[in-house]
Length: 110
Length: 118
Image (cartoon, rainbow over all chains, first blue to last red; front, side, top):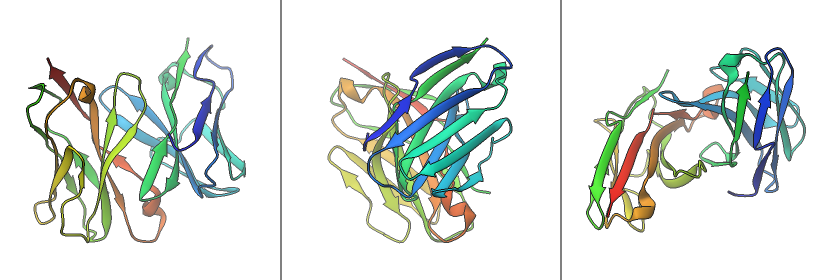
């Protein structure tokens, strides 16, 4: 797992509430990523970071924001959770040619 | 935009046999990387093997090897001596190796569910 942890591992929340997922890495990787995994879609990139305070959007960024104030932490925030954001969320870190993944967070929005 | 296609949603193989998973991709770039990731029932994404497009030699990692056909844009994964622990979803993925924003986007196929039967 290359020293990547995610918290929480499971969360159930209600529609309209804000949710923050945390990714923490211990390998001092420059690049960090947030993906979501849904049946029939594989993994899709939400946002990524190429350095502290340097972030950009992926292909499914609507309704999500990110922040990276330290090299080791990358936060994903659902500003107002919707049922369509029920998914498994993966964080990854590493070089662009070698990404290692965290264990995933299962988020259920009711 | 690049795309990655895995045409086999599910496959099965008998223990100790060999199986090949298919992947095709589409890109106009010449410098890129290809990957196979394994996702067992534990949900952990595990990097199985990586291929750099500029290397002609096919990558190999123990029982896992690839057949990289650059002109055909094909990147298949061969698993030899299949084991019960190989049962997993396998994802093919692609990333550009050049500079620029597209550098950062790892594009995945939709996956192939492989079941190894005893």
